[in-house]
Length: 219
Image (tube, rainbow, N blue to C red; front, side):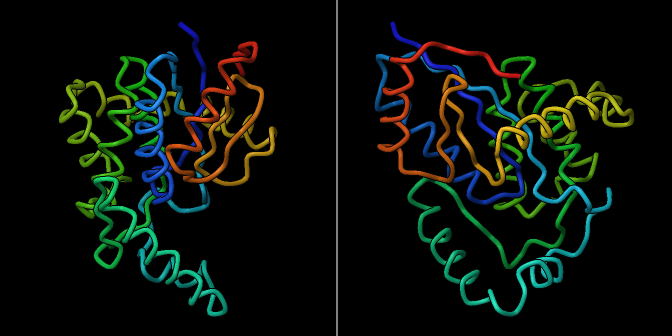
């Protein structure tokens, strides 16, 4: 069986990343003859946000700027229309906190070490966008971890430390050095990338293309 290795670079506060991850799962179903190994990679869209987070609505308004409000509303409308078709609910108007995502990335990393990275990412996306929970808060992250079967006490102790913070920062610098400037970004066999939440058919074509190329393990 042909196989493909994919680095999926994402940030759990990026709505396009959740949509892109759902499309990615659907794409793999279109090419069952190709074995795909997905490694989730961290990318903080804004690492300047304090650990306690900031008010979501004020942050988004300031970040987008007055000139881009119309474009932002159109983008959000597209997400709210596309989301349900992919089994996603976006509750943008009810989100209260824009978190720092370092700790969420750490939980996803730890889950990935136990073969549950994508499950953890889905749980974090859902907690943030659908359930409007603060995914920067340790208690919420512990609850999310427990819900997918991880040891809550272990996760709590790890979050109280700086474990893997430097490694996540190093990974992020690495992928930025490759030219990754936005997420989601799919890097196939270390050879080429597809950026954005592309349709499952487009991603499936990329899988087919990658299956014909030599495999390179990046990072």
